[in-house]
Length: 66
Image (cartoon, rainbow, N blue to C red):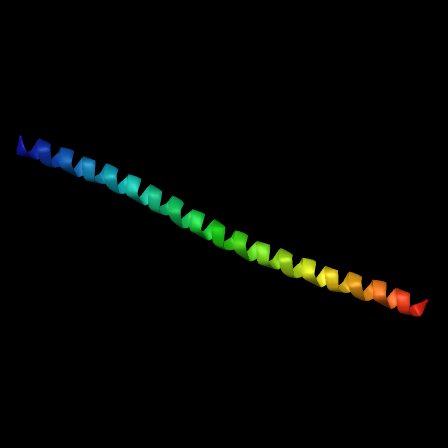
């Protein structure tokens, strides 16, 4: 009887640990995705700012040539 309870307890613990690891992996993946999304947004903003500066420079440059 004691062995069965121990086996059942071990199986319950294994199941709990699998679920915990699964949740932990998902949590880490979500955090990593958010981090990369934030980096991507920053890069896009920097590129847009650079394009904005270039467009302003060319439009003013063209106007000064005329």
